[in-house]
Image 1 (cartoon, rainbow, N blue to C red):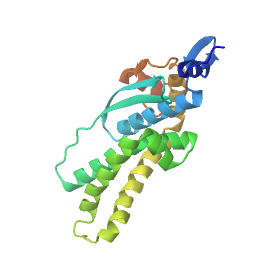
Image 2 (image 1 turned 135 degrees about the vertical axis):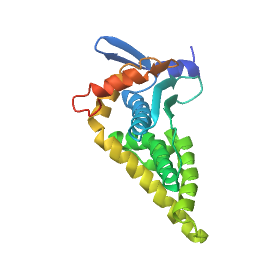
Image 3 (image 1 turned 30 degrees about the vertical axis):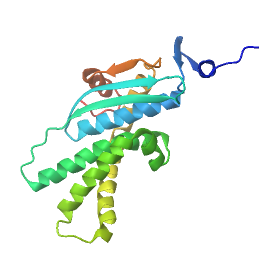
Image 4 (image 1 turned 120 degrees about the horizontal axis):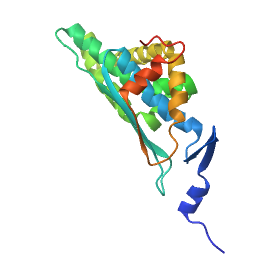
Length: 215
């Protein structure tokens, strides 16, 4: 009798999608693929809306023996703020925090889920950035406050602000994001392949959405 090893089991559990006559071979469900795409597009669209230069999005679904399904995703954004006054610094910190929040915010807006759980699975580095920036924001808003008991509350003010900023942009771009995710998720067909979605193609995709405000 043949005993299946872990690789055989993982292969058997692979999911075969047949969509519009095309074959998709991946361990990921369509929902899992959309989670990744919504996350990266959330970063990308919020970065664009706050005025950062944006570049390509890279997504790779990883299938490795002995590991749970995982992915690598990068949404390139290039902030170049002019920080001449303290208000410029404050604005930049809020914008940067909104971009960091946007991946998870976009996932939850469209697919639901617990905020802490989604950050743990998809945005651990994003959360670290937000928490770091909250220290600086607190120092700007409460420069003379030395009561450590108030620190958590004051830092939370920033976390709520950047989360709500990201969610507002995502809600405003809801139809365009749905259109983009429907298109891009169907282009991701294989594990262990890095897919690049270039900035010109992404901009055209958003512009082609029936209700898009992009020009």
